[in-house]
Length: 613
Image: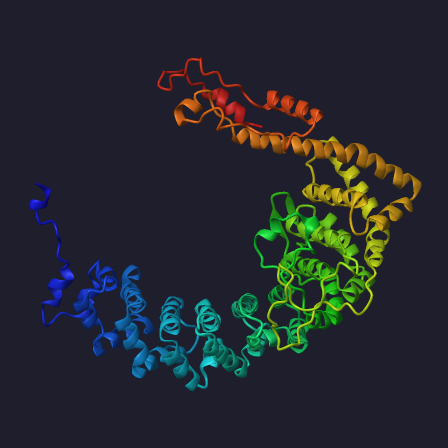
């Protein structure tokens, strides 16, 4: 019988541990050392927790391996050492977190001159991070006694592992009182201000990028935790500083001080965008544009907007005169003056500012003709869909500008309408509502000064002319269609329906006639065609042969195609049917299958000719 045979295999590690002269390196050579460690092999854990073994493990993750070793095996032992130290076994955690000499060995890694080896930096960060989570009080007490700890971490911020370490200090400390103590300590060390100083033209781009990302993560982590906690919990001091007008003004000063660089502008703008987030990034990018501005997690702190407003002219100047970039070769030809990441981020910032519906911000953008300039770029860079999407968001924000009654009340608000915990010690306010906001200003600017309707008509006619001559459809036509549909939908229903109706009536008679004809004929046909194409694409995915049901066991009642959502009218149904007949090759299961092994005559000349076009 099967159980007559003893198939239990004894680990070779136990055999090695029987030897008195066994070394740590010999054990680390074994493939199952990590498995045995996590399986709580007591003999192995007692061996690893010896002083000399722990010192060797720490030395392996903090000391550069000899350069003459083969690259493939050079970091083998440091990697295994890191996995053993972070295996989350209590005896190792207790030894590493309780022995100050071992913590000193770890800390000495930070005292090296930059740059750190990125792999060793990741081992160090992972080990310290595990201790922060498991031996919190001991490690925090040790780090707080080191006066230069934050300075050393920031000195090596070009290594992304140091950014991870800072975030672990902010997010992985429990319980709440101890976490609050850590936040106050980091605030006393002026963490936010020192990170902000790194976003400057004269700093290394990698350091700027990591500093920016750290600030963005601090904002999101702090807001998430503030929303989850009770109202009587003390405010997050780091978030309070980040949202203060003084801090935002300091960031903007660094961005525009001295010679402008794309890195400082982009990284600084990313922090501003995070401060202006009304929802966490993710699926909302896929939501209906027309609903934006109504479903919010919280309102925007007015101090952020007050700091940004004086610098709107600087962002406007960036759109006019961006940092110089070399010409680039694209799939549609050479682009002599690329749009650039700086201008794209300015467009993102303008879209975010418009969605706040702040009256003074909207008024200043109108005065500067920023939307007009963005529309110019929309049509100039007809193949940059990243820009097209941001301009579409700008138009959507203006068309959905809430009235004073609809605008959210001051303070942080959750989705359920209840106020969340204050983020800045009682200093948080919503977008100011004391000053009256006139939505007509932005709407009039969009339709009169920016000539939105005329631009849509002219661009459409120009594209039709290009296509009639055999040219390629322009890359911004999809977004232009969506913008045109937005205008039409807000003419029928929306917060500014009356204003748009009056503005359309004020158009010159010939322009108004062109617009009505465009809406009734061209746009309607485009929407119909797009609907049919979408339905066809969905139908194509569902194609199958007649024996599919027999093979996979679906009953007729369980498997029903439903195209009524996409093909919702008789005309669309007829067009869809025609499209299917034209583009789908019917399958005939009765047809004899082709023998792929049958010998056939190959005509190379014909094939070569077909490729010459």
